[in-house]
Length: 284
Ligand code: C2E
Ligand code: MG
Ligand code: MG
Ligand code: MG
Image (tube, rainbow, N blue to C red):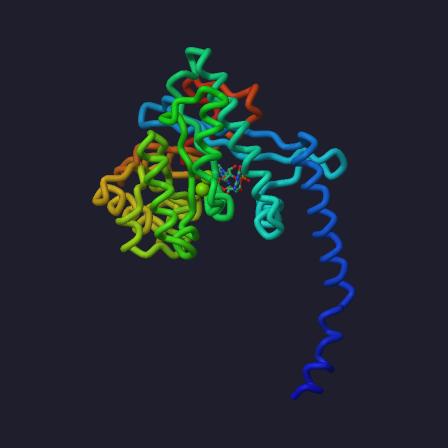
C-alpha cells in the first residue's frame, strides 16, 4: 500500500499542473500589487423598480491590469478567496463604496440611492468586520441606511450563529442585507427564516431561461413566493429582455437589475436617471 502511494506521487507533478500553479501564483502576486497600487475600480450597475426608476446601484469590482487588460472578477475573486487577498480587496471595496456614498450626499440626484456591496464569506467572518463597516461610515459620514450588503448562502454553512449576530448588529443601525445568487446555494429553510434579511436576489441562472415553457419559471415563481411569505423584498438579477421583465412582474417581482436597464459602468459614467428605452433589445 505504502509503495503504491509512493509510485503515485510523481503524477502530481505533471508539467501542465506545474504551469497552472505558476500562472496562479503569478496572478496572485499581481493581484496583491493591484490592490496596493490602485488598479482596482468600482463599476456601478443600476437597480430599478417597476416604474424603471433607478433606486440603487450594485458596485462590482474591476481589475484594470496594465498588461493583461481587463481581468474579470469571475477570475480573480475566487483566487482572492483562496489566497486570503479577499480581505484587503474587500476592505478596499468597503472604503471605496462608503467614499462614494459620502460624495453622493452632496449631489441631490444621488441622494436617495442605495449602494449594494458584495461581501465574501471570509471577509464577513473577520471578527472585526462590524467595526470595519462602522469606521468606514464614520470616516465618510455615511448614513447606514444607504448601504446594502450582499451575502451568499455559503455563509450559513460555516457559522450560522456568528452570521446572524453580525447581521443583527449592523441591521439595528440601518444597514440592509440581500441574499445574493439565491437558489444556487444550499440554504436550509430553517436558517433562511432566522436570518435578518431584507431582500432575496433571484440568481441570473433562473432569469436567463425565463420564458413560458421552461423549468426556470416555476423556480422563479417559488423564490418570489418564498420572499413574500417571509416578508422579504425580491430583486431579479440578469434581466436582459422585456419578456423576462414582464414575466417577473407577473410573478410579483418588481425590482430588477440587468443589461436591459444598464450595464455596469465606471462610477464617473453612472447616471441615476431613468433608463433609456432604446437600450432595450427588440421585444420578442
Ligand atoms: P454577482 O454579485 O451576482 O453580480 C452579478 C453579475 O452579473 C455581475 O458580474 C454583473 O456584471 C453580471 N450581470 C448583471 N446584469 C447582467 C445581465 O443582464 N446579463 C448578464 N449576462 N450578466 C449580468 P461581474 O461583475 O462579472 O461579477 C461577478 C461576480 O463577482 C459577482 O456576482 C460577485 O459574486 C463577484 N464580485 C464582484 N464584485 C465583487 C466585490 O466587490 N467583492 C466580492 N466579494 N465579490 C465581487
Ligand atoms: Mg452581487
Ligand atoms: Mg448575484
Ligand atoms: Mg450571480
